[in-house]
Image (cartoon, rainbow, N blue to C red):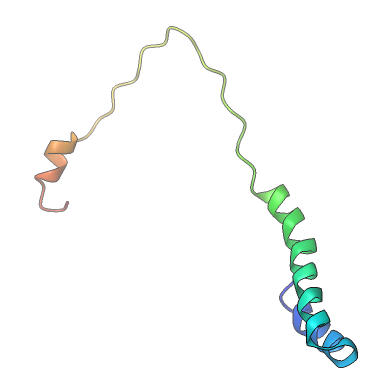
Length: 72
């Protein structure tokens, strides 16, 4: 998409002026970017919840222990 914008802007600017060029570039970005956004940026499907499952204990430091470490 990036290589198309200067070409389109040059053609539109030569024939119609800067106002139409501005709108044309905006339309190109919207027309190409919006469908890509819709197809690529989707949330993963939710996993089904299983009832009566014991929580798995998490290994590591508690918050107060982590705050006392030199690394933190």
